Image 1: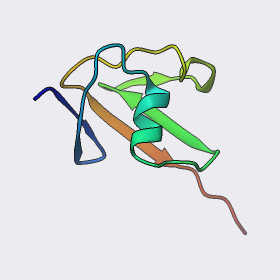
Image 2: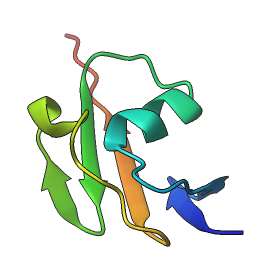
Image 3: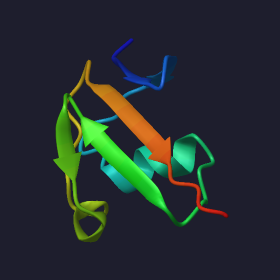
Length: 67
């Protein structure tokens, strides 16, 4: 089975999988996310088009703010 690693969780990789597909699979709905694929920052406007390679290491960081 082909996989990707998302924040230490292994999920199944599918051909033509995008960053948005990964976020959906992980049920991430928070609006303020930073995503890196194999150490490369992916801009929010690229989430629907950026293709995730098989065996990628994906870091998703939730930005928090407060005072």
